[in-house]
Amino acid sequence: MNNQGRQDSVQKIRKRIEIHVGLAIAALVVAMGVGAAGFVYWGAYNVSALQQHTEPVFTVLNLALDRSIRQRAEEVEVPKLTPDMAEQGRRLYESRCVQCHGAPGVGRDDVGKGLTPVPPNLAHTAKAKSAAEIFWPIKHGIKMTGMPSWQFKFNDEQIWAIVAFITRLPEMSPADYQTMSASGGQPSRDVTTVSAPAPARTAALPDPERGKLALYGYACIACHRIPGTVGPHADVGPPLKGIGERRYIAGVLLNTFDNMVKWLRHPTEVDPLTAMPDLGVTEQDAMDMAAYLSSLE
Ligand code: HEC
Ligand code: HEC
Image (cartoon, rainbow, N blue to C red):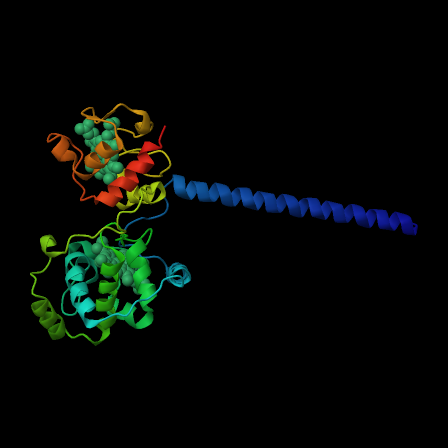
């Protein structure tokens, strides 16, 4: 064979190898795709809350959580956290958080047990995290855990009060906690003792983007299909597609902006027999949601 011929055959072999490798990779990708689809379709993944992730998966998920919060907490400005704030924070904490997270000398309630991931002991969190990193998950919640977002319940000031309380947890004994409870003067877990949620902002213009977030914050999507949102597609309430163009709300109220705000805040006052419950919606949040809903064609 001359030189030219040798080069040609080397090239042919190389080409053949490339084709084979290409096919092997394609086959592997398809096999993985089919495997993953089968894994999902045949329900191989065990979703039981008592089946903890394996140690490596747990570690990776925790790292993703920590990194995500740290990244977003960088933009949070921390105010001065005073003992007075911690007192107020204790009351809010006892009404909405102790059920899942417990407190010094107080165990978790039933909702805080049997959850995966388990709601962490926040004294531990307070030692490991900055105030901004504690604030962020309280305000925004944590997807795919049981941790709710509280921004449609508490304003920033109230959340900072809770953070002030949490940062004191590492030094707090059960006795300290009880004394604090006593001097706080309010019986525990009575929702009426929590100061009414102040509006997140004062008299702001209706903000449809914030309103869209509120549809998740108030769990509207659990009962309604709402264009632009992702949810369980349950038709407990009517689908809200085209609600902006409908003449009546729930068949009883003329569909104006003010009437929509009224409906969202107190549906059972408008119609005592309605199956839509009162959800404790604030004026501002109702205005923001009404602004979003009015845009739906
Ligand atoms: C229904 C149960 C539940 C309630 C109620 C709840 N949490 Fe949580 N919380 C969780 C879970 C679950 C996590 C996430 C655990 C994880 O993935 O590490 C969490 C995480 C957190 C974190 C982040 C902890 C960390 O180590 O990074 C903070 C801070 C927190 N919660 C504070 C609060 C506060 C304050 C309240 C009350 C306003 C509250 N939680 C109410 C279940 C709850
Ligand atoms: C527990 C289920 C449930 C939840 C949660 C719920 N709704 Fe409803 N909603 C209903 C039902 C049922 C109706 C029908 C009421 C009627 O006709 O009397 C309704 C009616 C409505 C209507 C009028 C629809 C029409 O066709 O006229 C609007 C708008 C609406 N809901 C918006 C919301 C928003 C926004 C939220 C969250 C703040 C919400 N709903 C939360 C069940 C729910």
